[in-house]
Image (cartoon, rainbow, N blue to C red; front, side, top):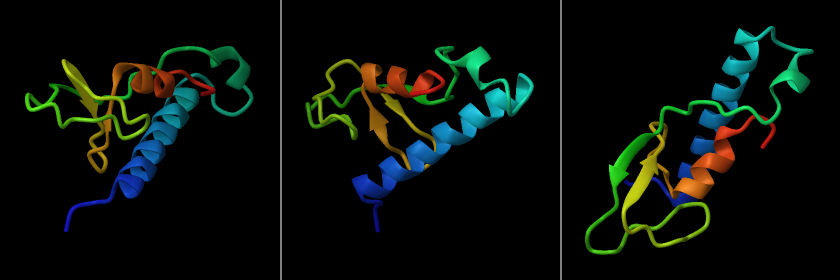
Length: 92
């Protein structure tokens, strides 16, 4: 049974939170949040070609994806570049 978009989105947000926490821990942990606000964090989402048939949509904003899509390894949520970048910055 395939995962629902809601569950995929939840799993993607958990993945992002874990990446942000790992990034914070590597820079001193709790108490250093202000030092890294606004810094881009690598999420390790797979960059893929969007579906040729035009049926590929961003899970987060429902934008039709024509060229590239980013796939979260945890659950398979698909994001457009703006949504992926929004998740990539600490404090977002």
